[in-house]
Image (cartoon, rainbow, N blue to C red; front, side, top):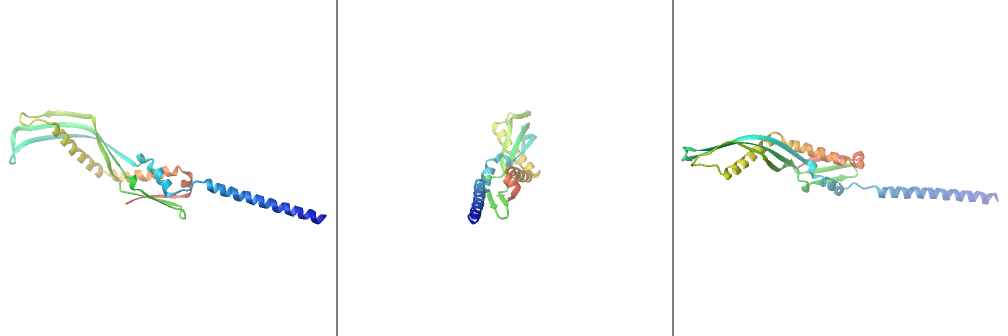
Length: 202
């Protein structure tokens, strides 16, 4: 009777161990299945959904003068000079094209490498409501036309863009893109705690 009683306890102990082990294994499996896996596609989609974050805006105010005089083989013709002075505000948007972005997630090294094209000027708008014209003068033989303003505007845009580039607009756009992307991905606790994010340009 004692042997039977001892065997029953042994079988009961084995059954408990098996049940506990099985439950633990199922729990680990379920947990691993429920945890989202960080993939290149997942990271890329998150970045593309926040494209505005990688745009740098350059605001400026400019005052410029226009002068035109008709000439005859290099000689300026008297009484044919037209001039005007304008002030206006503008904004230049610089950033990167995320459509050509590449993302590489290395699960072994726990790194996320994001490669972007070099930033560029995406758009440039002059605020028409801020435009003010001063000291407008023309002559009977050389009147001011709409084409004078449009051509002048085009030239002023080119000069403003050159000035913005000389002041490091694209360098700042790089920094903003790196900061924006790393901050965006850091909102995911899994990425923040387990991965190193590198943002590079080509």
